[in-house]
Image 1 (tube, rainbow, N blue to C red):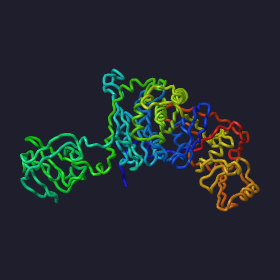
Image 2 (spheres, rainbow, N blue to C red; image 1 turned 90 degrees about the horizontal axis):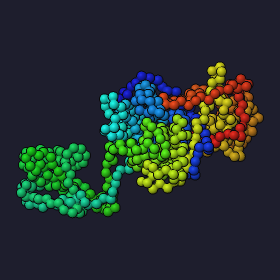
Image 3 (cartoon, one colour; image 1 turned 90 degrees about the vertical axis):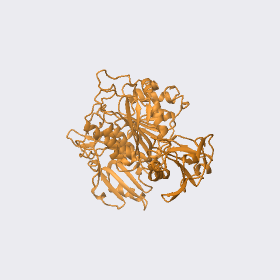
Image 4 (cartoon, rainbow, N blue to C red; image 1 turned 30 degrees about the vertical axis):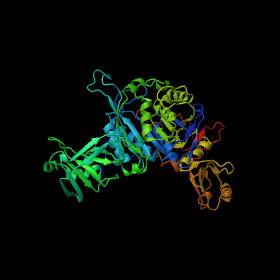
Length: 585
């Protein structure tokens, strides 16, 4: 079945699968007392995460453990404007930009919880194209709204030779599914708007409209007064616009009373029986009150739900226009870091997180920039993950978050939320590619991987959680209570296999990944599967690529060295006492 979609050059080219990298816990840049815990899916929450590296690789690294766990995603990708910023080269050819954005949006959707939201800020350079692209990835029915944000004053021009002034940016907002409900503005319901009271005379006639009894009062036979609201009062509602389709009273007016003033005259009151959800068994409608008018009203009593629950809460719509021009103009040094070209004020992120997340929810920003989203999420008691490719991960994000945690940051929203410091974060680097090319162009195991890293990486590639058993050496990871994985660079002998099988429970299975095994080991036991590395990996994803950036800043490639023995499938690795801590997603 054909569907409406955006087409561009190269869209039909399926991208190669992204390698699921390891995340290396880099304690040198971690800070504070990190609060760990458990995610809704039962997997461990390692604490707030600041990740340095290409964001597409980082998102892929997070996908296995964090799929369906993120409540609110805010991203502020490069706008593809053709202008060069100090920290970003924002000029990417249109089709390439769309392809790279789609790859990220697909993974971001996988990371979203079923009741989660994604908020993507953009300007009109790619804003409309991004909207259609997000319709395709998230489903048009999951589009909620677009926030329009004034980011600079009308008289503050960027360049004198510009024909048009860029004053407004957009934030496209989507939900993952219908179960996502934003935090609408609310207040305790009261009777203040139910302040209209009617006096009736004798109806001029009684008729039937739409199967309902209707008393008709001419202008001189009724009156209405306005005073203090009470449970006996009624609220005035204009019967126009979407109201005419939105509820039973609006539809009744549309179908039976609209234009009836031409028959009954002006100033008529209609008392319609058997309609409404209040304590009255009727509802008042009025037509136009004077010559030249065409609109009418209806008057609603206090809903029964509110009368039955005195503590009921009334909700209002969320605004979709925000004037933050002053905040954008003054946010340059928020958090103690100067970030020219695209820095967002904390009040903007606070507004988004208030509508689309709650305390303890997980927030993600994969274009972290100067660290604004992480800083605001931290101050608002949200869990957070931030990804930043550039050097500003060290020069901006780390020192900014250190100041937040140490209560040395009094800028931004600190006073609004009474921020008192505390908490912490862990800093992660992306591990290099598991396989890289030797001098002959063959993919071999990366020399930078020691035995522990290889075991963790193979567990990740095969869909297992890396969790070495303290007593059973071959139980390095598990995918269930009975399915395990073991990775070794030693020669797997029949004797070793027999010893493992003798320890394996009847209801347990084992996947062994090794660089070399004796022929008699193949298919020896039905509950043990043997796969050879790197052969088992070669067609699974793209290896030895460190840069999937939107033309931002490239990560330097790690220099390769040749293996001494020249055997691309049988390289052994020795355990290194300096093994970095692994966060194996």
